[in-house]
Image (cartoon, rainbow, N blue to C red):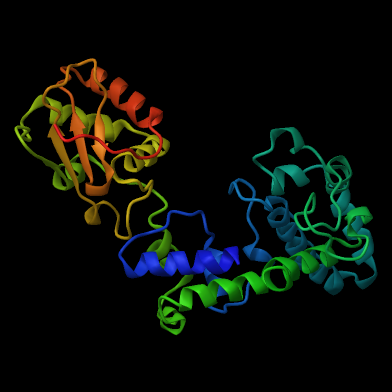
Length: 313
């Protein structure tokens, strides 16, 4: 029911011109389109997603398969010995888990034994992939079977009901068949917004509109643009959330976003910036330096939470 509701929410938001900034994977939208997924579509190490180990093991299995094909041509009876050599190579971590410094010099056997990889949903936790999977360790002899079973669970049996519920909820707002005209990456962008927040001084000057007594030549407006250019991705997302209630840019990026910037008359330099997120409006007290605006804006946008009514001055 939750996934059904999520489909309804995203469909209705799309109809009304809103995005829903959820971290839905591109692969999820591939499943919505009915596209088959394979082990190569598992999360990769460093992606920040659950299941990164599966991506590493899928790459390892692909390398095993390619190597074994070569062995069959050269020495059909040496395949088993070659596989055992690969299990003991001391660079498994360096080749397949490069982000983990502590495991770079470990072999496949050593790593599997150290972390306790077994026939579970992510290799380390989650639902068993087979009867007794939580007690069945992954070894060089069964790693191919493990990757195959994990792929079937992740992309078929373990997600089919959720995919169908999402499609049903989405279909209550928009015709699902019409989505076939788009690629998974395009659907993710349409429904969830832009992943990366890119802007520079020239684009900000084009999309930020000084209002009231504020002009483009006003030092306060210039300080704001400079502070925004210096922001990292985390602060850019927090800024967007502060001024628009959405931490992502709409499809098309900054070119489809507008922000009105007003001077907050009647306040002092000790005051914090405020916003009207429903109207994409930012109100700035009379700060005199870039550093002062940066510090107050950081405090304001990181210290804010939720929405509240405010009396009109």
